Image (cartoon, rainbow, N blue to C red; front, top):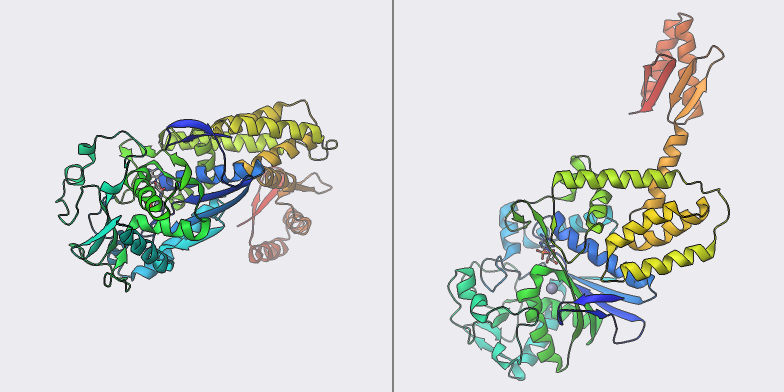
Length: 482
Ligand code: AMP
Ligand code: ZN
């Protein structure tokens, strides 16, 4: 596979520390609110990447953190704690908020066919790990205590701006954020590893540490969790593009200072989902959720399809019109798959293999998911029997996860189930495929025709009690479950 590496700013051949095995880390959600569909764009693309690697034969260990402590409202070391803000808003404890929104996040993931990572670790579970790393960094002279907090000393680094060529002045916290600079810092890019003092209202969750009772900074959690579950050599680190600076930059600084050797090889950043008025953002409070899409009648998998149609390194503009178009195209695709006959011939394994190779090559060019989607249409047109084309689609869907075969089978079944029963006198009953109900509806129709209204009403009441609604049609009657 060839993948763009944000650290080298080049498309490179994907390699791993241990051949055939990928250690993969994903920055997880900050659980103070629902995930918005922008966040979920990142998780969809990372899910496809993981599944692609497995499909290509790698064995993958994927780790994700849950940020339930320490992420401040600004991405710099300023502002209130996001979890505390969420708890205040909803009059709940921080842990209640974390549990509620973690569950909500995984429910959304399930609706979008996003696989749960092998390891999911809440940040509050690994306090000992952070304390160990921070103590070592102080011992090594890479971190210092000032004003009650522990800071990483960025002046000890050979290179700080890993991902971009930002002008140092532009990124100076005080200038960029328009906030008061933290005077405890020796250098303006230094960042907090452990807080015991904050000029904002204090975190509710605190732990004992060699530097006093306090809580970890945001960046240290990803280093701690990754070292615990991925080991010392990470192959692939993922996140949205806004995580690149300062979060990932700081992760690299502290991890390599702690380990004393290079840490992560490959950095994968998903660009943003934007609305007409700019980036969709949780902290701005205006955002779209998967539940809202469902309420408006969209299938969550139409949103997945929408995301797969564009490249992860391009900003994606969301509009209802774009989503409606994607939903139309997705439903049409399912209808075309449903029209394939599973009983048409034997599966030709050579054809399946051929398409697998094509898919690996095309999607393997920097995770080109839209080429993967295009290939689905090529398969539909392929000169192969129904069973073979369905087998190919099933294979490719292991990576794309659009539920192609299950949705097509359900559609086929629903169509077949649009049963009809007819009486000797030419009356036609259409329904949802239950011969017993068909027979009752037919009996009601005959009773009505014979002017036996008492019997007709009795049957209608019985059907109603079974949750079946009957309407008269020109040829007879139709029924559906309500
Ligand atoms: P958070 O819950 O804010 O920590 O963000 C979870 C993930 O979503 C991170 O990887 C972010 O980089 C990513 N993210 C945040 N906003 C967007 C957006 N508008 N589009 C795509 N990804 C985003
Ligand atoms: Zn992270």
